[in-house]
Image 1 (cartoon, helix red, strand yellow):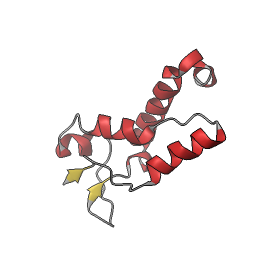
Image 2 (cartoon, helix red, strand yellow; image 1 turned 45 degrees about the vertical axis):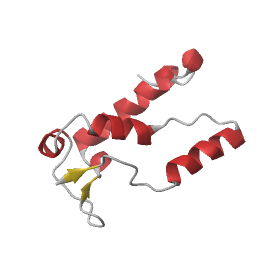
Image 3 (cartoon, helix red, strand yellow; image 1 turned 90 degrees about the vertical axis):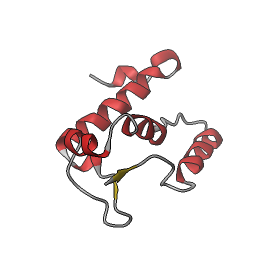
Length: 95
């Protein structure tokens, strides 16, 4: 099994950053965070840590947030990104 080691989302992440800049809205780069985190593990470790499932379209591992442990993990990444933001304004909205 393989996991995400490069941009498998095409132009979507770039478009979201551009839209955020244009609309003056903060964008938390969960895409980059996911790539960073996934690449810390082997394919086998990813399965054990997040879920035992496949994306039927390309065979890659990327349905983490649909599983209870994966959902909690992704939520923690979102909180981490929010709390890294300048002034920590978003961080106060998390427990």
